Image (tube, rainbow, N blue to C red; front, side):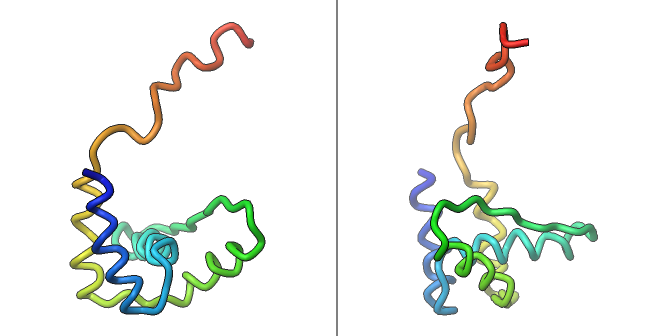
Length: 93
């Protein structure tokens, strides 16, 4: 179900000549104006080339039409992102 949610992100990315990751970062950055608070996405990366790609996301200006496509996606995500992590440190104290 979650894989289908990537299609609109890919379409927005293609329209801007950007990667889906750049669109995601630009959307997170846009949330600052929605919530009237500073938002600074901090993407993890293992490859030097990704640093430049991630930084380029700051120059991606999403349109109102883009945002209308992207905003409902988060509500459609199924499942948990991470397993229950409450007991991962049990016995390590």
